[in-house]
Image 1 (cartoon, rainbow, N blue to C red):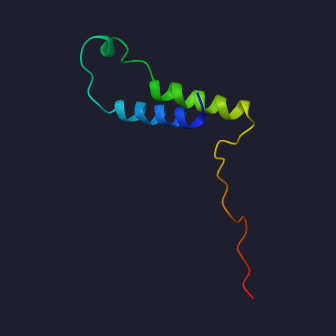
Image 2: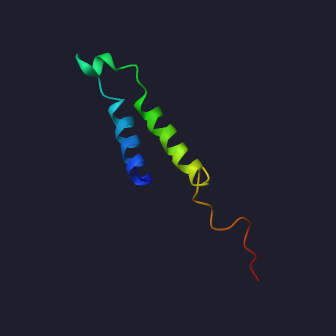
Length: 67
């Protein structure tokens, strides 16, 4: 699974965690932390490839000088 797929499934799991649970299989697995599972997979993906947790760096690290 690539990074975009992991982000997608993590977001879907977060949205689904806010919905009320019914009976059946979803009730039996209600204690499983699916968003946390995808968060761990995202962290592992980043670590394996040497990526930082927040890989989008700010454009400038210091205040620009005018003049």
